[in-house]
Image (cartoon, rainbow, N blue to C red; front, side):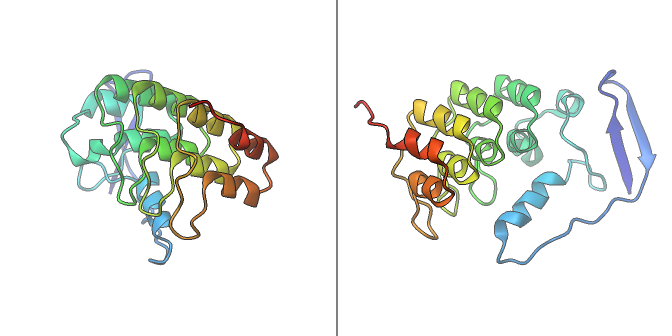
Length: 195
């Protein structure tokens, strides 16, 4: 296989190396989310026999919002914590609420992996706050499950629904914060809200 690497100092310059790529490791079908994470970590590019990491140079060179590969670009950038690429894709008209195969949006991935800058950018761009993944997780439920108080605050300030429940245990965001003894998030979620 051929591995393409892009020189970010000169986006027009591509370096091509012959290097074997490691096959994507799969886990059991019981862990469907882990399969999706692996797909995002090693996304198949629009080139049949190579993998291309999402980078500014890649986006600038190949961006086409109609291709399937690029419909996942915002999710990949949010997952990988690449704020500049997120901003570029948002400005270029990427679908803010496109869902990956487990139903998670870029906002859900950014909340799950703790990137408050990306969460704020997506909120300001108009991403829908309360989308639920196939498992029923919202961005707020993930933020509370992972203990990200700043992100939980951002989502609450943006009007996130505190009553959404995930499907397996029917837990709300508050239930997740209590489960993990995150007193800061519990206090945030228990504050009276103005109607």
